[in-house]
Image (cartoon, each protein chain N blue to C red):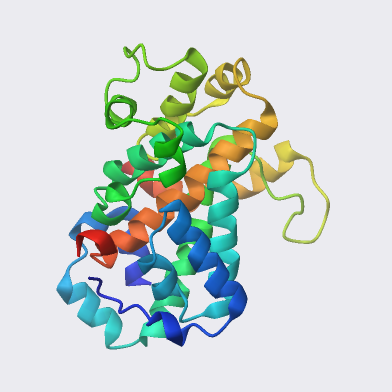
Length: 86
Length: 179
C-alpha cells in the first residue's frame, strides 16, 4: 500500500530505502505483478475521472442514472480528490 | 540496470511472450529490458505487452504523434528509461529530435504541429499535471479535431504509458543500449 501511494503521489522520492522495504515483504515476482497491475490501473483513474462517468449501479444493485450515481459516489474519485488538495 | 532484475532471454519459455518481446525490440519501445522484467509473470506480461504494442502502433492516430506524446509524458515524470527510448518506426518515418523537443516544450508556438496535434499534446500535457483543466469544455475542443474513438485511443495510450513510466522510474531502470 505504501508503494502504491508513493508511486501515485510522489514517485520522485522513491529511493533505496523504499525498495528495501518493499523487498522485505514481497518477492521480485510479486513486485513485477504489482507493477503491471499499477500500469493497468493508475493512469485510467485520472483519464476516466476527466470523462466524468460514474458506476451504472448503486451499492444496493439498482440501475441508476449518471446524475444519481454522481450524487451517490461523488463527482471525483478519492485519489483525484487528494491530488486536487495538493 | 534495474532494481528488479530482468530474466535472461532463455528463461522466457512462452513462445508468445518471446514473440512479443521480439516485437518490442523491433519497435524499440520498450526495449528488451521491460519485457524481461515483467516476464516473471508471463500471463499478465503477454496481456500488457500486447496492449502497449497495439496502442502505440495501431489505431488511426499518427504513430509519430504518439511517440512525441509518449516522450513528453516520460520527461514529465523524469523517467530516464522511457525518456531515452525511441520508436525505430517513428524515426524511419522521419521523426526528428527537434520535433520531439518542440512537442515536449513549446508546441503551442511551434510551426511543426497542426492545431489538431497541438490539441493532443495539450491533452497529454494537462491530463496528469492538472486534470481539472481537462473538463467538458476541453473535450469539446478535442472533438473539433478528433473523433470520439480517437480521443479514447489517445486517452488510453496516455493512461497506460504514464503509469509504465512511473513504474520503471521506481525501478531506477536505464535502457539496455546505454547500460
